[in-house]
Length: 141
Length: 141
DNA sequence: GTCCCTGCAAACGGTTTGCACCCGG
DNA sequence: CCGGGTGCAAACCGTTTGCAGGGAC
Image 1 (cartoon, rainbow over the protein chains, first blue to last red):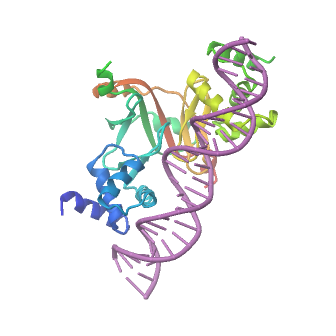
Image 2: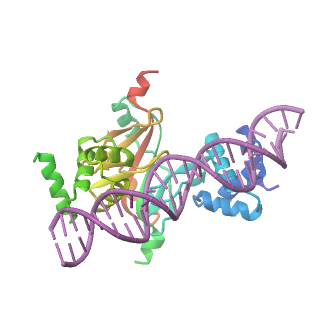
Image 3: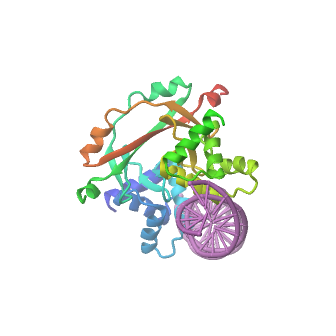
């Protein structure tokens, strides 16, 4: 009955999705641990609470949530996809040493729309992925 | 003995890589067909010239070329990786209808370095992926 | 009661790897 | 001739799917 739980219930309802305990648990994990978790990490967390929860359902739930726009899926060059409860918009910084993803506060890129238009393309969305060494890793140089 | 072939030979040499016929064929295909091919497409093209060429070698070669910086690997949300002979720098536009990747002429994003620095991160590289409907697909609306 | 969702296990696609042979330097 | 590269097949990993049973509405 926390505020977070109410928000999740409402989000699922608004999206016209059934509120199953598995979907709820996935959303809750993503919102409480905004660490861009992998499907496997989410599975482990949800499975810890409900040992009957299966990988297939985690994948199905994630796909449904992504489809509904409640979750964003990030694909990196390496490893599996990462998931992100789509709260605020932001860019991503991928650390090549530790593999973690750090958030970069959102800022718009002004010339993007204009450039897409040059090719007669219709822009719907874009994102920037930065790569390098994050603050924590760089500190230990 | 074309100009292109000499360039490939030199690039491999500069990278300290042996000039095997398979690596050469991979590079040649990527430079002649700058369409952001998948590993499978590259395999089919190379295998057509040399039916003994195997998938494993294509993957090994691509990894070696990427490692040497001669080829860029792009990973999209869907399907396998695409490869790009790293000639000129550019951004990418992914068409959600036809799945093709169009090039967007390079332009720098000015506030990127500054934003990365805010988080104490050391920026090494970045790229922008645009998504939407490309000119060809949009024309048939 | 109706469908959608779940759990299970098997299949899948893309990619990597172990090993013996081969060829470029 | 030496060491890295190749071909083959099997393994691998992340993800999807077919099916039978169960829970949300």
